Image (cartoon, rainbow, N blue to C red; front, side):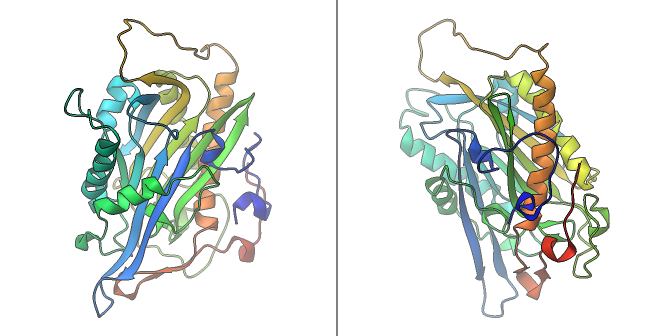
Length: 347
């Protein structure tokens, strides 16, 4: 269950009805999870997957959303971030997978978008596909390339506006967080009629670094110190790409509250988007009009607070909803048993 359902309250802002990134209207999340041996000995094992986040249910290339990225620590292998920050829009699903799965997921997403938009590369320009990753090689035989382009396509097709499945699913199947089973986590916050939602792919930290609650389960790993996290923020608030970048920076506060110090080998990357203003790809107009929150209004501070709180809670949810998972070489990563260890309030 989510940590809030176990009695743990993170922050002071109210949460959305699903306490999930899909509380932002139109946002969809889909997974494909791989969990099977790759050889007869069982030494090589597929313990990985793909997660797709769709900013809305329409044609993302033809109706782009305002977006920004922020890099806390750049030890990551992503695609598409340079153009997102240059143009301030996202025009494809946001895809998550393992490190060596980025090329296959990029290809699969590209194939899907080309089928949806036959004019790409013909009568109009190319498309910018956004893919983020974390290294799941402790449990997953990453060198065997179990993720294929088809898995990316299936994750997109599986996307739903329902409360997203969390824990050891999709891209989170093989991830380890604070020495315990991590993966996909989500949360949301309500701010004066607007919603900020967060989805994380957690894969960082040693058990000794976990600060939000004091756990001393002997099964936790200490050898997986470096790692990564991909943070996806969604909102229906009319924020510009520059304002989204400011909100994205506050994700680092929520990440730090859990115990992360953005280690040397960690790829800590934030991708943020707003669904409030959609930009049409085909238009002959010279100008366009958009509504935007004024910078000098107190609500901006609430957006910052919401991002920090939602990220912290999403990380904890990735831990509380993950299950003990076996992978390659007979390795096992145990779930963090929140109910067993007791609960409490985290400010």
